[in-house]
Length: 459
Image (cartoon, rainbow, N blue to C red):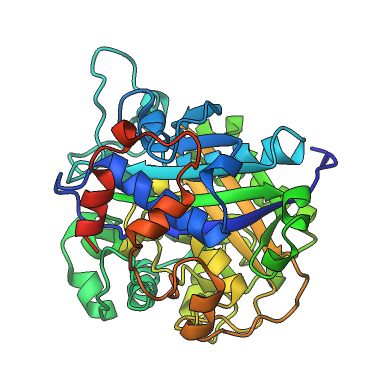
């Protein structure tokens, strides 16, 4: 596919809530509000400057996005609700980039949120065909089905095939999880922040071989937001250029016929990831060997293994060898999931892709000083949804700096609109700060209700 001319698009602000175990105590309207306020404070904008809104969620009724965005203001802008399985958040980012790059807007706020149920993912529409029905039927015919969670079976089968074809061992998948759990200790937003030995991971309850419990991501409640802007918008605010991060390359792709080739690896979207990565990296003029930091979709350790291969971070069939030699963590070839990944951080579906974006933005700004990655001049993001869709994105600094030095927390607190370093502290905001980003002319107290009070009660 030819890469058409686009105007540059930048991530100017990001915001996150803590990712937490679903207990039904925090509503999606609070999660979206908190993340959106933080992102606008980070971008130093007011909601009146936002020209379009994109809401990303999977579990909720239609127009949940309006419920969230109206809390910022009722400015009559277009608001789109996006549901694209686990790639929902990055789908929203890709849509915003397309709109801005082709001249449709100068500033778009993307907010992802999810209020989930505990336990494995489930379908709520029993009177119609499951969109993953063809995938599940293929799995049944080629690998059989058990009573284990369907997602674990699908990705676990991909792991089994990687073992059969390329010689990976169960310990290799466990090592991926060990690394992600270790990384999570330095992410204040992570649902789980405990580290484990390889033995502990191997001996945790078996979900579906080779996947033990500690190799599977949890369901989560959480929110994430990003402010995307045009070149004209940024040039009118030159003092913000040092924090703006360029979307240097991106590809939003779906499945090829090979998904039904009877390969468990192909069934998990290997080809669409491979295609999206090649296009995004080419657009950004980055080689896979030059990538030093990557956030990828590790819903299960098996998917991280397969994705390392599909992204080109290893030679074909050699991802397990990269894992064995310590190549996916600090001191190795590439630091994968410095946030702890979905396995530790959690996976609120609509927020996950935007949270990946936030993590990489913080790294390229030099704000993630407690988990800094040396030599990272670009950053790679991969967010996958079965059914299927994938978005692969490459980020670079807007000011063109080739080396990123970590900034101390005091300096970051002076730069941003929060007064602290959000990359290393999961804190909140004052009522005055929240009011500073809400619409000056079209705010509605009725739409806000008691959301601000409930959000602040958690800080």
